[in-house]
Image 1 (cartoon, rainbow over the protein chains, first blue to last red):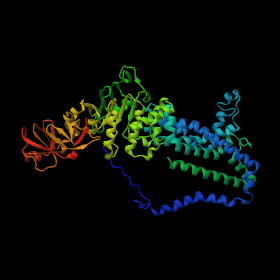
Image 2 (image 1 turned 120 degrees about the vertical axis):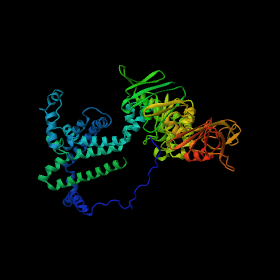
Image 3 (image 1 turned 60 degrees about the vertical axis):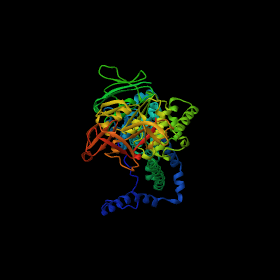
Image 4 (image 1 turned 180 degrees about the vertical axis):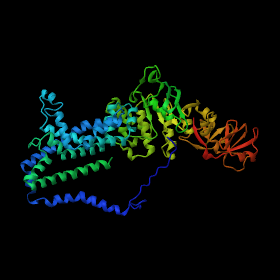
Length: 275
Length: 350
């Protein structure tokens, strides 16, 4: 409503001097922080045995661990989308008593030590857990199986997708959904043709973050799923074990994870900028 | 189609009722924050009122009130389309897909939806934009497409929330003309605070002030003889009707020159000239050699209007300063000449 206000179209160019500068000394701790994050990567690179790098990362155990990691992380990302998208929509688009508390609780895995998450999963879905008996009757044995790996990863990665998508939904606002509904579109049609396409970049970057978190999962996995080669021993578990017996292999596999992480960040950044 | 609206929204202290007849366009006129948009939100089913009877063609859309069974038809099931201030074209769809959205949502086939979209895009002269993305067209074009998209939903009632407020002044006359054409035989509720929009697009005006109806009636009547403070402030418009002859409006034996809004009126056809009282100057003697429109008149009333004085002369009025009234010694009965620049006069065919 209201009179038309001339839109300010001039965007600050890179040549514009900043209006209020930052204190000069602040660059020093900032630089130290950046070095603290980046130097360890150099550390890994300096320790890689390039001569037998290919052999190290293609050994049977390594290949199995890498494939298992990619498989379980993909599945858990899928699970995060299936469960997380409805959660984000409910949190962003509806209002009900206790919603704030629920939101905080859903985000709990974000701050919970993963080992604690693994213990919690064990005493819920494990044989002697809360639902263990029921699952036993149904003939399902979850703990120490590949399914347990996927569950542990989903448990820790889900909040990443929910937070990312809820933010995207709030930024997108409801106005397009209102228009779509007034054009006669049912809620499901609005969700499918308007809501999701509009937040697709946010959904993609959320999924990428979830995938990255799943790929790096260690604590909850080893607690709830154990470390059985080919079944539950994912790449981070393999690296941890190799560190004791074959440090060169551990370093080589770490580098593989670093490369994957860098790729993931690149993808996530692209998702953000197009938002 | 008949739309009966009556609603009370307590938190916003809005209590309004009106009726839209078949093919009628009702303008809700009022200052910002008066409750116009609240009325639209209730009509569209986006807001739950505390007490309401909103009925479209005998079908209750919203019913609320103490001891009454609550009815709240969801927005998608009301056959009421909303056209907002911003075009809000779905950014991920092409112009064509935007217009096809409503028919597709109704379950129309691809071919049917395409035909509907083509028809309405042509109707708003945006056919050549069909393959573009909303980010590739101008604001005025986007609002045209938004009109086509709303009409493609085949709504029984169209709600327009200041459809031209966010647009560049240069494109509003053309868009207004488009709206005039598509609203001609359509039931619609138009929210605006522009008197000219109300005059050109609406049959009836409901003036809303502080959440209450201040007055309502036929548009020309309300705008030329306003009784409410708001209508007087924005309107009190001078309206002259006559015939269009050789490039000007003939009223009695006088020619009134002005700027034509939209299509040129047909030669010999009825036309109307509109101008604001603030654009009118008052002279005791007719100024000689003036290129302005000169209208001889006799003062009937003089009344204060804020820091100005409104001088009424029959159906016409002029806003002048208190000093001018004193210097010219204006009193009821004085013969004067009213003068208005052609650029301040809007002429449209009726």
